[in-house]
Length: 230
Image 1 (tube, rainbow, N blue to C red):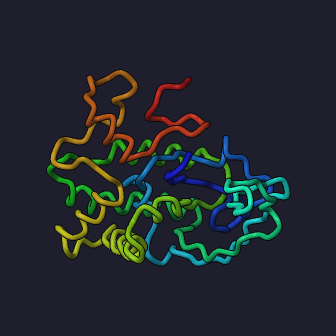
Image 2 (cartoon, rainbow, N blue to C red):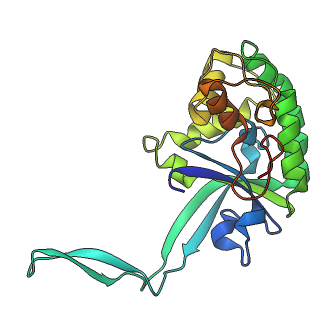
């Protein structure tokens, strides 16, 4: 799913486990995902000290082909494209799952102050806590390179660091709120939807669907507590 972020757990403390951890199973290792944003409460699981840098080799696919322009034929032709793997410097948050859950709880007072006009996030955080706690693996991370690619070069990682810094101590409310709204793509200024909205307890409107996903993400494969089971 292009331009998406993925909240992932694994038994190895490695960034981008879908690429770096042998045997990673997306149907259980992806807690949730969302498109074109990083959901607000995912950020609350981490702090600036949890941001890691890791060199990752993306193995080439020997069966891959790419299209190249052939001036002789005046058309694109398929040529083998899997001879060499790409080496990338990945930057993303990664922390032990139990610590992440402690940090989620600790972030709630700050988040509730920043978003006082929209309403408390305690029930939403409780649902995310349940999803993370029941997911397999000892470590949790966000695969967010596709979101970084949507931002102007050099602006995304500083915004993430600022957002994580404000999770326990609000220093510049207006700036921190603006960063979080931008990263999570929230439609702020209206009450947050109830955490159990999709479970039939409240009548939603379009902005409520949008904001619930931007708070928590949505089901990738494994069930999540805030959505009805398939």
